[in-house]
Image 1 (cartoon, rainbow, N blue to C red):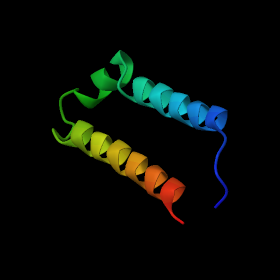
Image 2 (image 1 turned 30 degrees about the horizontal axis):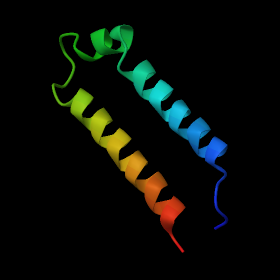
Image 3 (image 1 turned 90 degrees about the vertical axis):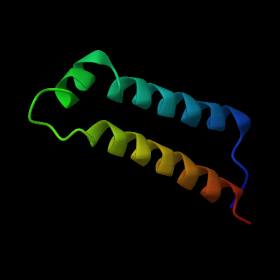
Length: 63
């Protein structure tokens, strides 16, 4: 896999940070914490974010 230019990596990082901010912003968090939702839903979303970051980093560093 060819190396990604540094400015492209910054764009991906910024997009990921903005996605995380959007997911964990107040309106979405209020929806998650409303009664009747599963208590572990925010943790599953964090787990998905962590796995996505690990997957992107592993793909980028594969020979």
